[in-house]
Image 1 (cartoon, rainbow, N blue to C red):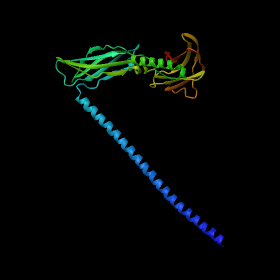
Image 2: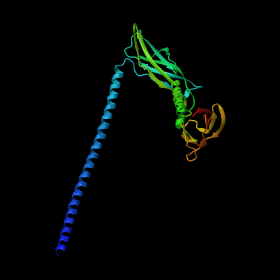
Image 3: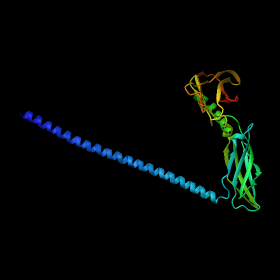
Image 4: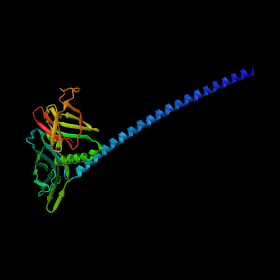
Length: 302
């Protein structure tokens, strides 16, 4: 009897402990849910505060820029190029700005340097009404696609990668124009800030953007070519070829095939692929594309 009584008491004790544990766990889970809700509320509040601060910061920056522009003696210089009038790589850029508190005998001059030129060419500005000035500057434009090359080479080609990046930076500089304005009267000369504009995009209106991805493996490489069109009237790439060189000696060419999984009737985007091509020493790769208007362009991609 004592043994049975002991077992009964033990079972009652275990049941009580389990009951207390369940109650405590329930309360603990409830508190955890409350804490999680509080943390979520704090997170929402923080995001709201950050959003408000960013909005207020942007507003303050706009106000300060507006005050700065109002207090400046010269307005922002606007550049406009009509890309539809580009012929044979020649275009004309129009620059317009306003000079405030202009003296009657002031001389307003526009200074610009194109590409790698370090010396600035000066042009007397033509005055319109209310202190508005304008100049027209001839610029050279590379008519064709904006070609972007993304390479994933193996480690032993790091020097080649650096050379390619330097070449791309040089091409970027060649299509850059720097300019500023000076106003002089008597012995006083005021000089504005030097502004920089890149003109690479101007000649791409009809040819869009070409992105080439070259993925290098141990002994093979893949080539992907994507044709992004700027607008519906842009020409599209009809054919693409890979020319393989060993130094300056042409070893052969391969056609880069259009990817059939994408809709070839989509004139705004076209994909071309060439996979598992053999690598070799002193390798040089050039891609040639043929557009729907018969225009052809080449680019060294490796």
